[in-house]
Image (cartoon, rainbow, N blue to C red; front, side, top):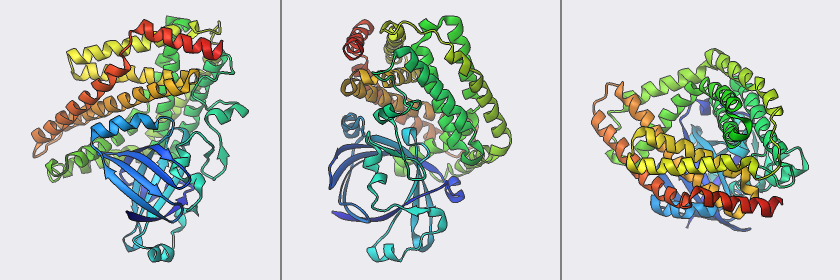
Length: 470
């Protein structure tokens, strides 16, 4: 058993050295946590790890085991409700040390933490942190990842309590992306939609300081808002639905360039990590530098064209707030959402069949969009029976992630076509091989997720609705 010696710091802002570094997306889920021991799963790039840790504070004992993709996917659903997602950047320090800077996402958006690992306790105690590392929170259990991944209190960047989920019942609940059992469904769905619009506008106002992270967050809010629209499509009427959906779609497209530049680098990095020695690193060095320049150019323009596009998107979103407030969503019954749920489930099921018949780029991309619809809608309805619908939503999320990686590889492959590289055929072969692996895993999840016929799925959720909401 190895010892892990590290110190943790709360950052007031993302330092320039970290902003310029490549980022890796990390997803963590906890299988078991008690006072002394935690057992977690982590997916970072091509790595999938099972880790057990014991103890607290500066020095802890750790055992780490690499998993095959199949093992990881079998265990991951067991972490539902105890997950987090963050973007990690590595910043070199003096004496060969490295600060791992984590920007948290989703419900923890805005939280910035850095960890520095040391070869010995003596090195840890001799370390003098640079001022940008901020306040030290080593040993503060509120900032332990297992606490952040749970359903309890969250912390804002200043270390104050903030609330999400059930704890928001005491407040206005505007940030909670789910329909609460103690609120009328029409008012709740308007609250959720308006909350996503407000959050998107707020994040776009931070583009000057937060750059690509703010744009990424706003795009996610817009996707959630459009999922609410699709859920209510029949009730809103086709004309109103199309106009409002077009508004938020167009706002999202204004923000696509910065995020697309970031995704290409992340996808290339993950492909290299996954393929190891098989990956032609030397042949892709120039390509990587060109992608880095494009990403930097897109991110560095936050005061110019990017800021202008963000302002245009914010104006579009803000102009739609009155429309959300004017939605006529009566009555307060299962019928309000039934058609949208059946449509999302049925479309996803049909898209799965389409992929099985013709697994081309268009059919896989269509399935990805429909799996995201179902994921967001199940998150909205999760309180009807959290233990059951939470697990189902987790399956839909995992499916969307697999298909998302498939899509990112398609985008990377399209970018490859315009480059003059030494070994394009090998890179294309590695992309296609990985996409085939992803599709096998996705179909396996999809066959379970869409095992019921749409009407049977709808009847089951209708029964949950009646039992939970009367």
